[in-house]
Amino acid sequence: MRKKLTLFQSIILILALGIVFTAGLLFARASILSQAESNVVFLTNAYTTGFNGDLTVLSVREDNVRETVIAKDGTVLWDSKESASEMENHAGREEVIAALNDSPKTVIRSSATMGVEQLYYAEKKTIDGTVYVIRVSYMTSGLTQFLTGYLPWMIVVTIVALACSITASVLLSSRALEPLKKIERNLSDVAVGRVPSPIKNEDKDIQAIADNINEVSSSLVETMSQLKEESSTLQLVLDSGTDAIVAINKDGDIVFSNKKFNSFFPSGNKYLPEEIKKTFVEKPERITLNDTPYLVRVSENDKLSLLVLTDITSQVNGEQERQEFFDASSHELKTPLTAIKGFNELIGLKSEDPLIKTYSAKVEKETDWMLSVLTDMLRISKLESEEADPNLPLLNLAMVADEIFKELQPLADSRSVTLKSEGEMEEPISHTDAYSLIKNLVENGILYNIKGGYVKVKMEENTLSVEDDGQGIPEKDQARIFERFYRVDKSRSRENGGTGLGLSIVKHISLKYKAKVFLTSRLGYGSTFTIVFPIHNPSEEKKSS
Ligand code: ADP
Image (cartoon, rainbow, N blue to C red):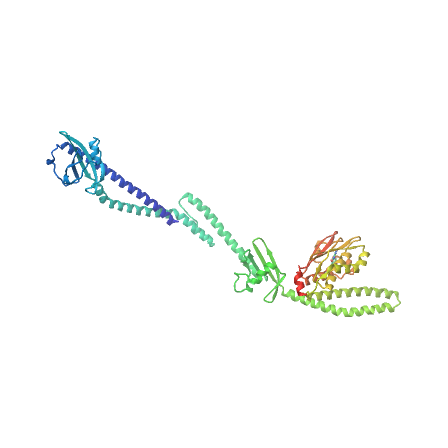
């Protein structure tokens, strides 16, 4: 900035001095010429007056004035510097013509004979009928003298003036730029979070601006230190948790990561590892990193995506233990329960006592219920450890629904519920699983319906839904009804012979086939359970079968 300003000022100064210098030279030349002109006119007058036609009295002189006497026809009759006979005819000379025309004038030109710039003036004089032209030429050596005498001084003066002006300009511009420099220092202090020393200036206007900058700077520094403090508190909080947290911007660059996340990738956290990048896009429910299972949560806004990984090792271990316990106890209970059922049937058959017959019937109902609970428990346990066979052929689900309708028609009739079906679809699913899935949903639709209601199975592309216009499910229970043994109304479920495991079986079959389950329900209006199967590629299936 300062350099530019100085350069600009120097150029202006040089131009100004150049103009003054040239104008001075032109002026000097003009005044010297005018002086010379009056000299030459004066001398010509003097010579003309003194001339009497006698050429012999004229004398040759050594100075810068030259007289020439010229005849009317231009013949040089006499010259004070040269031999007249050797000189050319002067009839065409401008000053000679002017003199003969009685309108003498000064003429300036380079002398053909002398080769220097000369001033000429001529006057006509008639003596005894003979016309003479008396011409005086005057060497303008004054100008050359002036130039050789004064030019070096002028140059020296110009250089000194220029040097003084440039020095003054540098001093002035650095003084003018001082407040800007102070502002720059102040702002660089702010940028690194240092409290800047306030800007002070003698100029009132500049001080007013400086006061504003001082105020803004100190509040900026304060805000920055507050932000720093908040950010380090936040970092401490997030570092002390057990979750691994990382936030990325829209370009995929890490903008934040906590200690736990960094510990996965000790090479530094500048670049996001591929497996984590994938997690942001695919959003799986769980991932395994370094043999540890993590629950995945991804949240996004228009600038950032946040990934939180929660270590679920103990949960997974607990799940596994519970599952093993669930499985073992079901097996352990099923054998004695089957025996109890058998003996109870015998007691009922053998006894004639009506009271014993009544008790035996009650025991049978309870053992039947317990056995169906155990069967459902074992079914869930099996489903949890099963994976779908990738080579299963496509199954017509509309046909499966027909079979189920036939089986459940008596139950539907007893409750005055109509069974309807609409559309068709095919899925690569085993008959047992499809049957169990649709039956559980249709059976619930009948059992939790009202008199005159309907249950409709709809199939379209890869979506199967079971809709009823029954009692509906309260909103607070909707998220939990897929949990084992969760029932909205326990007594009604028992009355219906429900185990509380039907929807859990539905969930596990869906999980096995990577299908998604959705529920929409409104209390008093009915419920719709929707199962969306993954889109299967028929050409792929043909290849594998
Ligand atoms: P249950 O053996 O009790 O029927 P489920 O797991 O099949 O067990 O269902 C869990 C609970 O969800 C039921 O007890 C019932 O309260 C509620 N429920 C299931 N299906 C329906 C439905 N179609 N309409 C109303 N409530 C339902």
